[in-house]
Image (cartoon, rainbow, N blue to C red; front, side, top):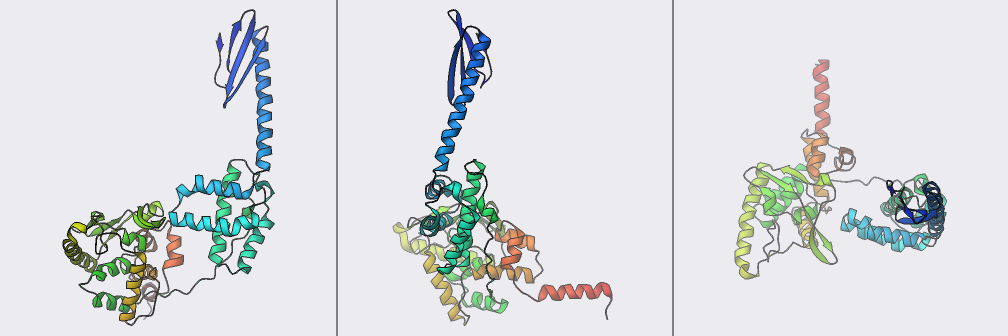
Length: 375
């Protein structure tokens, strides 16, 4: 018997004839001939024919694959596991409510830049935000990019569709005086440490709600952002962070460290008061029974704090903008701020989180004065 490598098969004698068996990518062919050479040749010809038939059948199936079937299958079976649950829910909503009603009945091989652009135009006419339109385009781009990688389609039509430009919103982070007023007003209360973590450390809401005492090293004056809490199927659950760089170390200021030390005592009194009903999840900002704090309660307390201190209503996420701006105003570099906030790149930090502040500009002007010897 003559054995060959995978795809070549093996040939052996059967009576006065020779048989060749070839296994290739799940396909098996056999051929008989009077000699080994003819047997192998005939088997290879059969393999080529089978491959051709398989490609033809595959092409036929792909030509009938509708976008709505491909998109939902890809999103549920593959992409869902690579993104945050909140992103998955948003993508699913966009697919069901906008993309599939408009383009779902088209075969994926029929999609063109014109059709996709018309979808985005119609979304805008129907009152959808620029952000929603951008996300719809992003979803199609990722999904059809994967279809292209798998040779389901010859090219990704989304590449030729312009991404809508979102007009930059005017963002107004808290001033240094407002930050001081908030921290002073709530000193010694449950909310004090929560304000420090938002305004000084710049943690996202889910990161703060999911912060555990095991993530803090009070002796070293630092905390590790490792997990977050999100609402999944109506329940609060610990989940992984948005990106790998979201996992980060945050060094604590002396005032934040002091607030957290005092907060630990507050939480311990809560635990002792709850006794057997306490849910020991090791949370830094728990409810009265130790369970995760409600995002809505967290937001409402933020708004009440602003109102009490005479500060205009702001998003809780604006506290994150504030942390970045405060660091920047004190000469902290963009890359360092980016790492402190857990951004995937410093470009995001520069574009979205660092707002107009005069102090670094004054320092720059002063430095130029120094080298130019301007009197």
